[in-house]
Length: 584
Image (cartoon, rainbow, N blue to C red):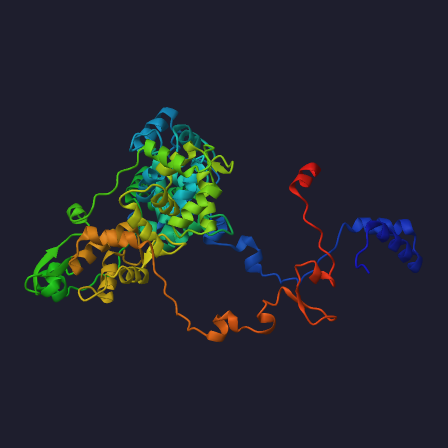
């Protein structure tokens, strides 16, 4: 029944082979031991003299190609190749500037307080995000992932000890990219330019990006062509790979400097000053009626997107036109209620005591779930995920310190939904209605949900149609995206109020009191023989599940009564509580 043999069975086979062949068993064992293993014989290729005989190689192939580069003779004017420099790629810096020393701890602490914008002694994700996005060109997902590795205690902020240990500890490739942006040094400018040419999600450079760097930094010319750039890249790359790291990139700069005859330090400074790739698209032609705005008429003359006609209540005709800039501070605050202030710690403590229903000094998941379900549309999975992020100690309950840290440092979108529910304010009801219309798993609103909000809140009418709701949504949404945030939603309400001629505060209250979307399904008609249970007959008349027909009688007895259970095994009586206590 098996298909394989062990070593003991293998020795038995050798005995049978020796008996079958008539040979000596010990000699056979020695021959098998001397084989050392299986022999593989593939197809033998024929010999090609010009390929196999390396003495026939010429040009760069004669000197291996990867370690020698012809340099134009600077004393001649004919531009011919006059000499050949042999460079060992494994040798250390011949003309390379020494690596910058590691920063001191005092310097790192000074930079920490420089990045701490609000002066609370910690660096939050909101303070770190714009620095790494603008300087290091990193994506938001990569920044959040790196922030979690820096935040060792998981409190949502980076303390000075965590920052220092991250700077001097072991780092990933993305950490090296962020460190070059946060801890400036002599080589950080060159390193940042290297990472920007790699792309926002990569930390190594491919050949196409290296060629673009040479073009953008104006390194290409008569002495250094695109082909030379490809050759230099292929010399420093590890065989079998397609990208190079920063150390290999510095090696390519040495080869480029020797190839072009330029000074290495000046070359490094020119590349560091580039700051990143230059993108130049196709230049459009000038169209007078489109580019010359003095020719615009009608709503286009006033930008169209921010000017809304308001009907005159006395004459019934459009007599005024308000122009509102949604991006300016005046446009944002005109007719809008001020943003709610940050709650005080005492107010947060009072709310914590209110949500602690059993008074044990902590909030459990069972206490938090009904509150979140009654106020928001969050499901159990989202509530449990949020609870785990709030419970830093992992003991299954929230103490007062964990609750306060979450209120002032929670930064995810689901945290914003929960804060709007747990920390009430003037704008929290409006924010909750916004999140309820977004749906149970989303914190941003689509266009169809915005239109439904306008319909459910009875905003759609003679002065404001569903088409105009779509137009307003397209005005506030970011180009290329399909959803709007709560801030963009507030801008949309300003435009709706002006378009419909209603008061903004009354409009906000109407939306806030709606609570969420209204769902009206198809109402089924009344069916008498189905809905009126008095018309039921047979087993349906006695529910069927509790009526048992006995073969010896013509009456129906209750299966739950002692008399009705003559054809069944008698169920044991339930034990008393005192009996259970005695057994305990």
